[in-house]
Image (cartoon, rainbow, N blue to C red):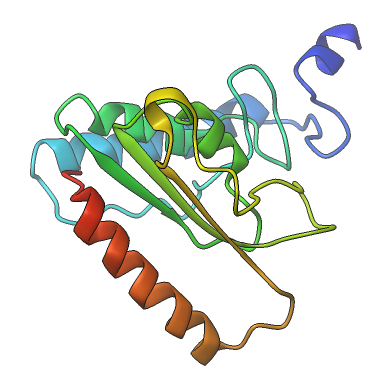
Length: 169
């Protein structure tokens, strides 16, 4: 029980039969996709079982046990100087942002519901630190945003991010 508490496993990250295999598959799919991108064996890689953006280095969170995104980005960084991560999930991608908060090699850009909503992070003023200052972009959204409003925010912001950051991966 103490070991489970240490890694935040239990409440919103329940232990279940096959958990280890699930983590292997979800993480392996994302890393394999990154390897294919690095080898230029594909232009697009999608892992429908991935996207577990809340897990931290030593802690499960928000039904996310292993942060496959962080591991895939680390793989991309072996071949690419700069990687842009865009998160359009309703929840802030806190685990990914935390992993790269102090580097300029990864820019994280998160569009998410904000306020009294899990994980409660991703404030507009959270912009990175040290070498990573200005490489975390958070766009907190109000409840009830419609598609047209979302598109009118997303397109110009991502265009400017792409222009300024010029990602390589």
